[in-house]
Length: 296
Ligand SMILES: [Zn+2]
Image 1 (tube, rainbow, N blue to C red):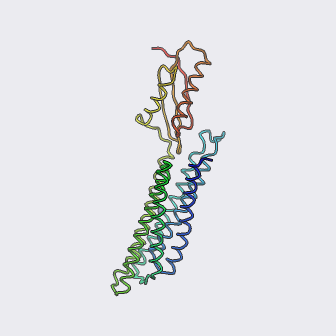
Image 2: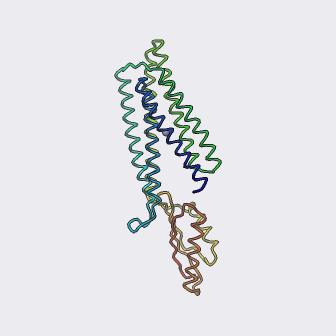
Image 3: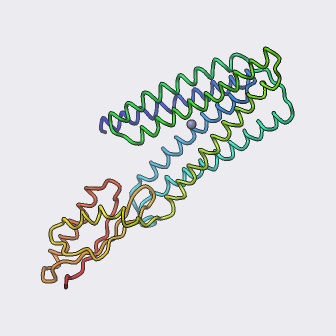
């Protein structure tokens, strides 16, 4: 196991553990402190934990080698896991939103306890620290996935800032008898619900986009063309199609070779084409090469 992989894995475990702890603390604090904003923020953290688990399960399933029933591999398992999580987020977000709206509607007066304020400040500090840590690590080991993860932690910090504003205003309203300010706690809850639903929508959109087998366009396949052209013995590329299958790419290509060479030599050329594509491009998981005789 490489050092890079271990560091990446450690970072994702740290992020998950932090989310579990934050979900629990914020959940308890939200109920005890009577804050809908903090409860919504707790459910956001819980959603993040479930998303991470789904991604882990999906990635594991996607790594299973192709078998007779799934000759193209299990890449789509990752997308199905993502799709389930995205629907879950939309439902959870909607529930919180309805709860917040009904609290505002029914004039449900709540006096937010300072406990909610302390916990939300703690959450912001933890999330910002996680952002700093993962952003640095991601840049150091050049992992786009970790940098994306870092930015998720920052967006979580922003979600908590929204909760902080709501809780703070509600507490001021409570203390100075400015009743409309007390609505800001459920309003913040509604905004966070919106964030959770948006997370669900964008995750789902991406999963659907990838699940549909997409034929890559000319611009995207040009790099494959250029690489195949360099292979010794390839006289012409008759066609080259690449399709994305889950997170990876499968290439079908027809090449023309000298018609007088032996089958063995022709086969060696097609093997080189496959090898160079798979070595050059990490995302390429399989290459099918058809050999034609070359005539002008
Ligand atoms: Zn999040």
